[in-house]
Image (cartoon, rainbow, N blue to C red; front, top):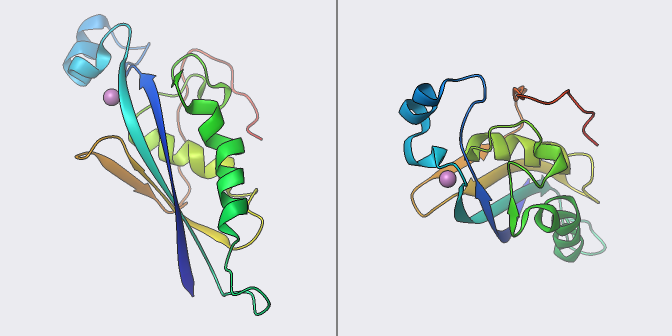
Length: 150
Ligand code: NI
């Protein structure tokens, strides 16, 4: 099995808070990340696909196609956006780096032209990173009726 990784970058704002918490609970839980108008990160997204190289091309996946899928399904929708307000597929989700990994997985898993999604790794900063391998996780949503993810 060969593992192939494509790296994408985007900049976005978010605010970490739970609308069912009191202001005091949000302050105690999320501290500076609960800043009312949000704060920004330069995110680095690593998407790893696994498979065997195609005998005709030598590719597990054509990285140009993977880039296009990443752009269309994720990067173009989140870059220079406020993740709490501007992104339909994150509506009601607390946009922690953990929850973003899971949401991004669901954006990609059915849309790869070849290979199988192995992991999503998301760097929120040089110090904070989460990685997801697709085990079932339900992300709770707050304040919005549930919508079907496409
Ligand atoms: Ni943050």
